[in-house]
Amino acid sequence: MNLKSIFTTILAVSGSITFAQQQAVLANNQQTAKEKKAKAFVAAGTWRGIAKVKEGLNIPFNFEINEKSGPQKLYFRNAEERFEGGLVKQSGDSLFVKLDQFDNELSFAIIDSDHLTGVLRKQDKTGKPLNIAAERKNYRFETLNKPATADYSGSYDVVFKSPNGQDEKTVGLFKQTGNKLTGTFLRITGDSRYLEGVVEGNEFQLSSFIGSSPAYYKGTFQADGSIKGEILNARGSQPFTGMKNKDAALPDPYQLTYLKKGYKTLDFSFPDVEGKKISLKDEKYKNKVVILTITGSWCPNCVDEAGFMAPWYKANKKRGVEIIALHYERSTEPAYAKKIMNRFRERFGIEYDQVLAGTADKQVVAESLPALDSFLSFPTTIIIDKQGNVAQIHTGFNGPATGKFYDEFVKEFNTEIDTLLKK
Image (cartoon, rainbow, N blue to C red; front, side):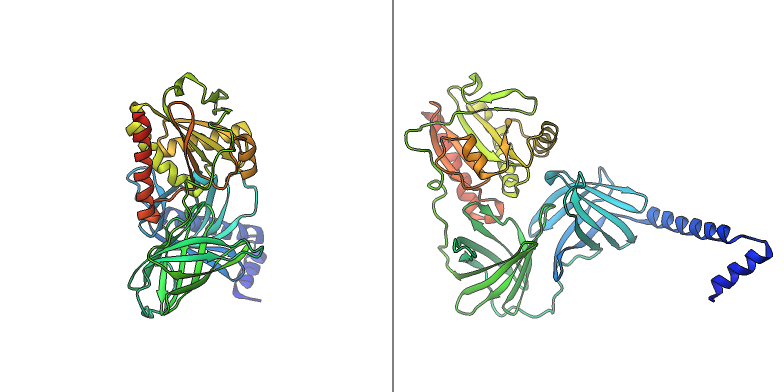
């Protein structure tokens, strides 16, 4: 028998305190300790998170929480990007972060002043949660402080292998400073956004997380300019190989999605969040250049596109141009759709029309817009001229992480709009 048991027994026999009373005292002391810990906890600061995707696969990421000079928010950090996650709320010894962009939330238990443990889950608690741990650290990957054997910065022709034989050609873009490595993979459907990591010797690791699904890449650079690696996630792994090429590029994004033979325009009538039907035939769009963006609030590349389109529209709407965002969401249930589409509008300050076109499925897009010969990617941008005819279709979106490719898109987009407005 230990001392605690002996003490409890003596007190119980002497009549000073019962066993139940002793347990109540201990429970009260524990509760008081938890309350003190919660009151002393300061969320603000820089954190290193670990997403425990599956056995043997822990993906690191970084986030920071601002001081309470206003609403306290969490920001995900990836390379040069500081991505707003959501509002932070502490309740007792728990910390909650609503990641409204993806309808997710982080739910943490406060272990001590420097450690959190919890889950990433859907806000409605459906689905399987992802275990997350966090500690107050400023680095991303554990390293051996091994110098890189060379500077591997540059562009690469990269092929992602597929078990069904449908290999995907991409462009790898990397920038190295010492041991720090940043980059992205540019696909015809969009890019991998901001990746951040390290290179030691000739081995590299990269990761990214903004509140949806964590991404992790690892591999090696070779002296002959080749690259070999794999992307790992909950579904498994996908290998890739490539070769350094300063002229690496993808197929022309303006030639991948097009109208069926005999069609010149699109015809649709979709409801906005209030149920009002919107069509290209409406008076509002007559004799104007109209931009259609096929999008979804769940789509990271669509987030980048909205980040460009919303301020662009504010600056150009008086020139005779309109935008309609055709949303394809995870559910078309009215209350859900209204919630997430309004969140999307508020986050980016969208002033153009949004309509609910269907569920987030490429086949649904093709069926709801039958004039399209095919549909490859969220997002896809379609430009309609003043006569109501399709002038241009751009597949995917080259976001800010792609550097010159993003700059080229912005220049080409503005040139096309300027040309159409003059006609």
